[in-house]
Image (cartoon, rainbow, N blue to C red; front, side, top):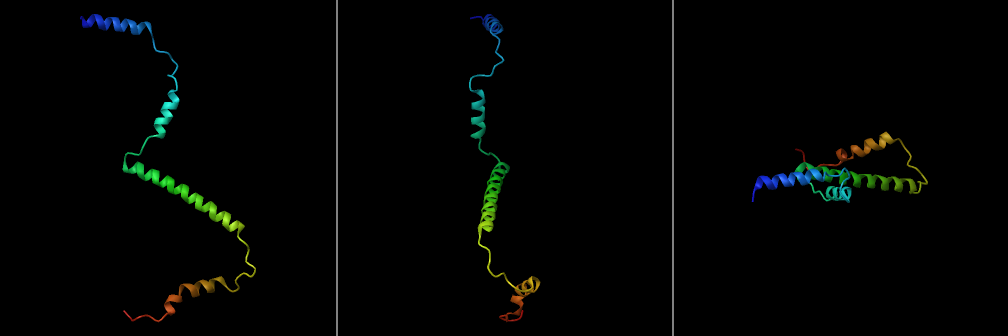
Length: 103
């Protein structure tokens, strides 16, 4: 069989039937499914995916804490005293404890 003749016939058939400008049927759906099924391939991709999942978890915890603090019952008798004195005594409480021995 003459390959040059076959090649010319195939080129003539291709010129008679130009491709259409419309995309193939369900092309967009196939592309979106392929993008959704894509798995991370590098360490940086895995890190990015895990950070986004962590960000979603942090937002959920923040929202839950906000709802909890908004709906929590108010204290009937708030603590009295100076906050700075209470903080100071709490921070230095470990220094007032007798140690097991000096270094």
